[in-house]
Each structure stands twice: as structure tokens, then as C-alpha cells.
Length: 150
Image 1: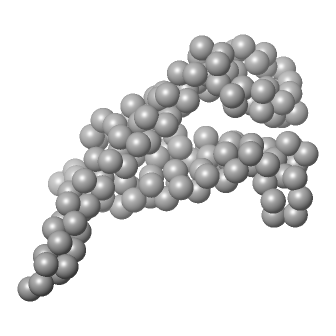
Image 2: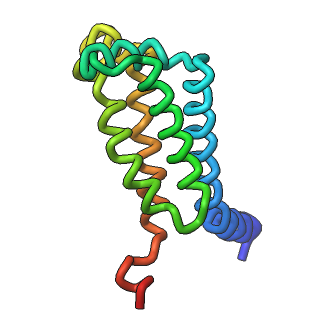
């Protein structure tokens, strides 16, 4: 086998070993860090969250909601990091992703600058497709529930 083939095989083997831990760590970092910033009231997403909250759940104060949301995100991050909690992480991720996509429809002036041209906030939301794909990749490595309990 030539040097390119051996290098390719080695890289593929490395990526197979490293991809799942890297995905878990990446999701932990993003969710835990961004959630923590919300708790500190330093998240650049807080104004968007406040505007969406005002349009959808005006009876809940921003202070109450941001504490809940920040904590919720930190729990998602921890659940992706801890082996055995992936199903919980995915279950928590689903409503989070649905909710975070809300501004694309409910706040178009904030998330779109033209037809199919998102603002920076819109791009921030659309990148969640990467998070969804990464979570799906982690979930694809789980053993089916019925096999775990035999």
C-alpha cells in the first residue's frame, strides 16, 4: 500500500475513534458555556430571547425565563457529556431547537435582511442544523433501548 493509502487509513481510524467524544465535548461546550452566559446576563442572545419571550409568553418575566433557559441549556450540555444520558440530552434538545427556531418565523425583521438572506441573528439560529446533525450522530451510536434491558 502506498503512503497516501496508509495515511488515509490512519486518519479514518483516528476520526472513527475521536468523532464521538469530540461531538459530545463540542455539544457540552456550546450548551454549557452559552447557558452559563445567560445566567450571568452577558449572553449576546439575551436581547433576542427577551424579544421572543415578549411575543410568546408575556406573563413570564425575562429574569425568570433566562434563569430557566440558561440552566436548561447547561443541563443539555452536561447530559451530552455524561455517558448514558444521551437519550435525555436528545429529549431536551428537541423542544430547545423548536423554540430557538421561532424567531425565524416570529421575528423576521430581526432574523432576515432579505429573501433567503439571514441577519447575523438568523445565521446564529440556522447553524443549529449543525447541532441537530451532531446530536443525531451521537444518537445513532446508542444501543436500542430493548437491547439494553435484556
